[in-house]
Image (tube, rainbow, N blue to C red; front, side, top):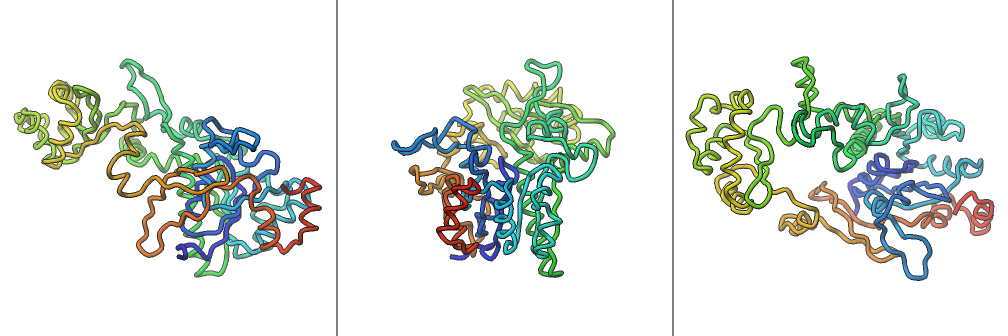
Length: 408
């Protein structure tokens, strides 16, 4: 089977998460992704553990980190030191026949190696060059480094996430996964595919300048709009929603349940299930606007009723009458959910160290679905293959480059 992007070749000069996530998204859809890594250390995330996938008994080192494994499947790894002239020449040779480059170095950092977008677009005018940085290619912050955590802070997300001031445990909290990096990776893939389509129309490639900071601001969505319309900065509300009530977690007799009541009819049915039908008739609560305005009066009315039954009992009752609800699962419970099992969300890939468990792509195309061709590669696993097949170097020349420390 040919993937939807099976005609595209990608050179990844990225590490950590945002750039590799964009590249893996393209790779899952069929693109041939060559991941260029430093010969000594490889992608930074190879050292981000534990946990590690255990290596074979005869191998040395801790094995492959789970972090690295989450974002590098379907790629081939070539280990090149492009700080050396011969190494940068090898990368430029790879890029001359590529469709896409993805990199996440600081602005200007690759120019001294001739691997900046201007240099590579001169060599290959059809190239689509995606730069993912903390703050973009211009502006007073352009040279600042930035990891996801920092961008969640400066980009406003942490002002919205965490327990409200004045309540026990109050304070800002980062999201439990690197949502800014992941969102930037997805925006990167979207922008790249837009540039591919533009190339069909114009015959020209282009430079995509994508920043974590702007991604985070874009992802503020309704909260940013709330501020822009009202002029008031939203605050942390714990598990509550600024625009919909009741839309939060409640304690039950044995845990918690999430209610996401999105309409007045759903609220009426909720009140009936709670044996409090009068609440839906109360003018303070009859409409969502009224419920938002009178949140402090309504929530104490719902809380004791929901605490009377176990989570499973409420889930069964609410689902039967179409009230949106959910448990708060731990990850072992998530992967055991019947929906996750039937949809084959856990997949396993053969790897030199055994089997790599990973999470399937959610992009379920009917005719060209994602393909799981390769486990995340070992550092330099495909160096000889790529130098031989793509750059037509013979074994003698490859040996010379390896002896000089240019490749691994």
